[in-house]
Length: 198
Image (tube, rainbow, N blue to C red; front, side):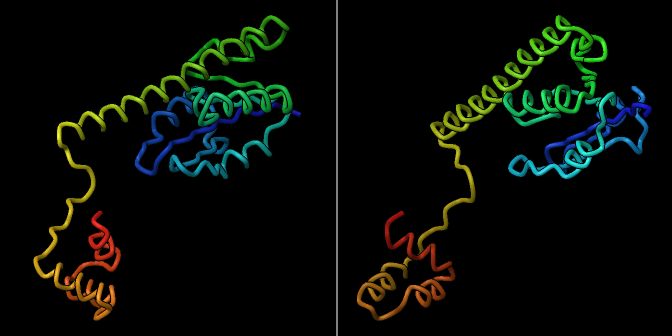
């Protein structure tokens, strides 16, 4: 049976544009009908198109991706997918951004397989480390901003003068928290938070 060339595109959010990846795959060339695309949020890694693609792949086929991180979210996942595709499915992988990761060239002998796996492990590790460093820099930036007095989130609602009177009535069981909140035109949760001094 003739081997087929497939492409996989993943963008992390609905806002991200997949055009760059699609263009690179078409230039390879991968036929449009053989390109599978997933748009995901960072929290949800349920990849229906990727799963469909995995079912289609047969030994001798070629899978083309623009970058290695399209295969997974982190170091372990990328390695797991690489091994599943190249060893279990016996499908070649071409990573366009990294010519060394082209198992059509390297995967035919033991040394080639070793080199591709080694390069992949180093790249996956670097990608994972960079993501962790980015998150660390974001945390440090937020902490530094907080120290400078920058407020994040919605501004806190001012406590109206009539709150103290209603709080006392609530403590004396003369009014419930829902009615007190309604009179202050705030949510019941906000009223209870103010009562507890938070």
